[in-house]
Length: 144
Ligand SMILES: [Zn+2]
Image 1 (tube, rainbow, N blue to C red):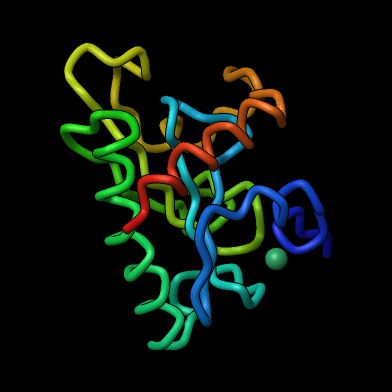
Image 2 (image 1 turned 90 degrees about the vertical axis):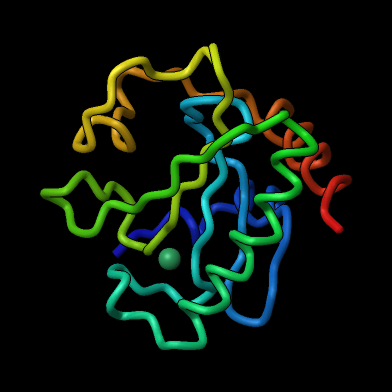
């Protein structure tokens, strides 16, 4: 089984923050600037495969990133979600929690359709790696 989160060096290099059981990084196909993914360090595919410690670790990072995304991107609200299972649009077999900073008038998606919302690899451009590294640096500078 191939897992980009475990195998791609770019993703490890893109880590914004990490704790004992989880890590976070900007996605290469953001819906809005600052769209980050939070994943357990261990390669498990479903939310329910995570231990309580891993779930807690993922949500701890969510809390830390929330404040950083407010400071960095002026977020006024968030979309937080995950796709569980291939039919639900899960494209990488390693659990990941999407976190999107949103603000009034942002240039992200305009219609909310959950099946397309987090899984539209064909219809969103990939961001260049340098840009993602800038995004991670910006967010990291605002972590407290
Ligand atoms: Zn993995």
